[in-house]
Image 1 (cartoon, rainbow, N blue to C red):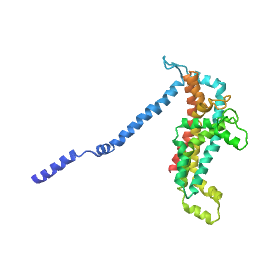
Image 2 (cartoon, rainbow, N blue to C red):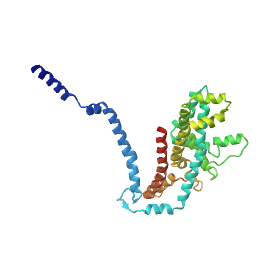
Image 3 (cartoon, rainbow, N blue to C red):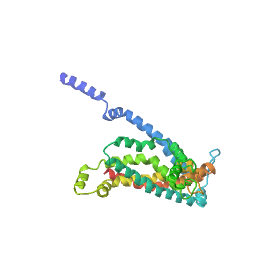
Image 4 (cartoon, rainbow, N blue to C red):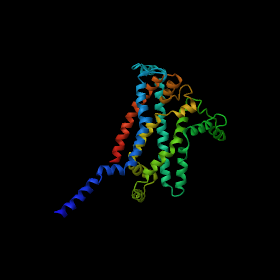
Length: 310
């Protein structure tokens, strides 16, 4: 009996000293929880708080010096009565459609070309991705020189081809498409690499079988490439819409909303209300409207992404 008791007591003591499984898990993942808390704090201060503040601001009248005053829907009435409100939404829709025609198709086409190449593929990936590494302001100012009606690069090329120069940013017929070209060039690399990664997941046996059947490049793209990448194409389409509807830096730095308001977008009009008209409530109201529209596309994007994950 004495021997049995002496064996049981140390075992019980060891079980009491042994930390619980939950405590061991927390201790093992303490570093991960620390990084997670840091990310949550950053999101709270720089993402969630500004969103909540904007919603509140859209129902207030304030100059950030005195006390804010609740005005209900007055800011929304002011914005809706603005003659430039409809034009801003139309310009944003036109920019989004043009960006889809140019900026959505071109990266996919370049990715197909890169996927077909056998040599210098890594070098060409770097060349295509290079514009993404430039700060957006630098890229936009570079294109501002390209578009210069005098010594600008694009007009010099037209003159060398014995063609008349264009007022790229000074004409209502070319200003918006000029902004689309800048936006497409800046974001070309990211879209191309995403498409290229999707293309490389397609089994090579499908292309080999199609080649044995005599299918050319365009038939392979139509019957294999596009069907095999339809989900990523849809996801990128939604992301393109969400991104282009928030366009701001291009009209701000290149045209200032001109000529004749043809490049005033919703985001740029929101900036004008807040910082030019000192109507922060009107800017918040415009931001809330844009956020509600983008939430619809974001909900569709999340649904598509969930289906892709399955």
